[in-house]
Length: 328
Image (cartoon, rainbow, N blue to C red):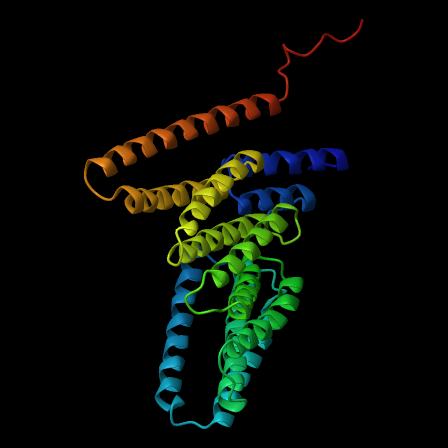
């Protein structure tokens, strides 16, 4: 077991590098770090199969409850609807709080799932109050639901800085942003979501919203979907989508993140296909455009592979034969 703080820091750096290169998973890296820090492994006492079966059972119970509630929802008055959603939110929050500190990783993940569901019921509760009780219309219900959900999601994310809690917070804030700028048949909501998603991805890269991979994935996906929404209104959305995909590809090289690379490649393919179809239509012209696009993508892939190989070579420590001889 490592007894030197410097040696432990070196181990952490190596583990991070191995995770980035895809040699080991994040969970495996954390298990190795725990073993070196505590001197003993922390095995999963619940198998992944058992955990998956448990989630399936829980999903069936939720579906049964939702089906039962839906049968009486239309006939229930406003007070009954608010009470049902408030009770559901309180129960989910309480169960998540009770399970959050468990030493069993599977139970901790269950707490995260319960809290995500609590954020969803909070949004539903706020929407019911805004529509059925306050009789509001337009943007107000969406903004109210998003802000209320974000108010609940923020402290939950502060307590448990995991991907599930970040997803809940991001979706809540995105709902509030999209609703606040909601204008029918306009590109404004999509542009607002694109700006917000880009800021979220940048914040993830700066370490402001860990884990960074979740922030990259959420920001990338939302930016591409926002560009797609803008493209349905104006052709500028196509060029925004291509620019977004290109930026993600460039960022993947700089940040050494395969998440950004994956979204960049998919986004480039989707938006180039749609742009070619928009301007060239079908037939031979489209075939030529696809061929040129495919060649360009291959060239980009070669450039990325060379850049990655060069970075690996520079980061690799010198071998024993390459080290200067020790002074006599």
